[in-house]
Length: 580
Image (cartoon, rainbow, N blue to C red):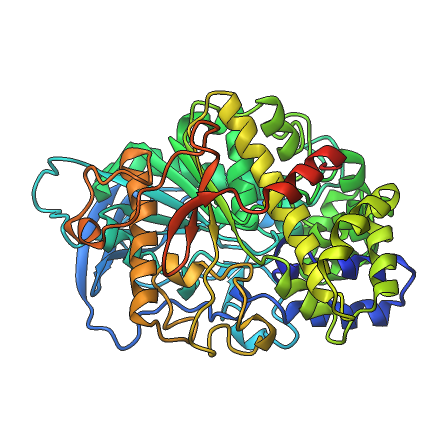
């Protein structure tokens, strides 16, 4: 399926097509279509270092050896630092292992290969140029203000980025996520991490870790990277007691899981999740085992023959992953088909669904949380799958396939709000509300009631330059899924558009909000912030509480605090009680 699979598979409507007995050829055509609709997937993966004045960067001694970095225009950069030994050979489906120390100086001036993923279909040119099983590396960005030749008087906060990509694609070195900008403007040390994807990171072939793959290796990789940060980041001028974990889409889902995983608790202080698809359910062990059996059969191995599975070439694993992904594991849970490979509820590391955990208070409630969505998450998915108008009858069929006994109530709620014969806008709004916005609001309010410090936002800006998200005309005039990323990372040039002055201000303020959260655990605080951020004068961002009227920050060129977005609709979804 698509490298972002509509980013965690929220093309809920396409799941109907797959589940209704379409042929393998039709499924592959649909998969190719889905690959073409993710904005983040259209941004080249190569780091933005060409045409820059570079100089020899600092040489640092970290826990496992000496590394040589780069001095670029906005920060020092250390690319491709190993945080675990290569998960290859007999270590393919094993938890990540500590790094083997090296002698001499390790070259940290260029990114390493991305983790194994498919680069096929219409966006193949935009996939990582190199992929490999040997991929457990991270990048570190340090402000130029840090003087490595003198003792650091005050360590800087650390921001650890987990990339999205439906747990089957993406890269820590994607130019869209260039950490130099956040590091420079907010005076933080930024770390971007890789983790095993697809079958390499999440295959389940049995229950015994000695004789089978038991899954969730990608999450364990992330955990290993966080441990590396605790052990090494002080050398880069970072404060290991002030680590903010942040991510978007599948990265946000990962962040939410670490808030639920007890062994991750000491590894970070607070969290940001952007566009978390709360309503995409994690698989059960039974469902993951069924997918594992399909994978093994496709690879011409027995699911109990770990030696056969380990003997597969990386490309053979990838091919079997792609072919087995098209099969519905549980036909009564359609949304699962769009996150075929990813974390599952193993009963030990991950014990329940994220929505359930946040509602019941089964997470690290003492940690401050910043979360939000874009205002039109669903547009890119619905218009990417349905290139022609959708009639009211077709709309009813799709809604029934997904929501079953709740269909009548949902149609009664949404149909009166949309009068166009083409119902795609309505379907897009249902995706936005059910998958992203409303379960996020529910989780946020549950956190507040549990005593947590929570801030909430909606990114509501429509870029003025029509080149933004080049090739996706239906997203030119919408705040689609992933639309905030070029603003947050100040990487608009990579996303192929030029910011206006008001958009530049929006980008600067977003950088400063995220930076303030990293510094002071409060996006509305300017304590310890850089002169740059004080000059931006960002509007006050109130904490998300009942006393404040549940105010959220509307991020647009005229950013402002406002009453919660679509509260009446989210009240409706809450009463249905159908989140996973």
